[in-house]
Length: 79
Image (cartoon, rainbow, N blue to C red; front, side, top):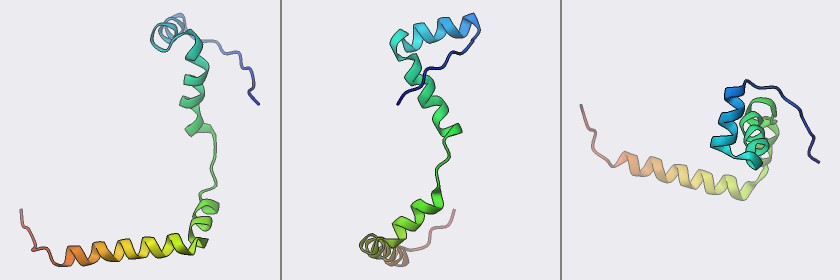
């Protein structure tokens, strides 16, 4: 559910928002701009869920082992 918020900005900011973002897009613009700074995500929970996915972990391990194998056959480049 969306919440209504009243904010106060400088006249230059107000005019810029209307001219650059557009009248009906300002709320979404400000919401998207603020989200990464104010919404805390629980990374530990996300990482635990990914680690519990055995098929995904097996695929990731195979992929990373393939990279190590590819890199070991390339000649070293200096400079």
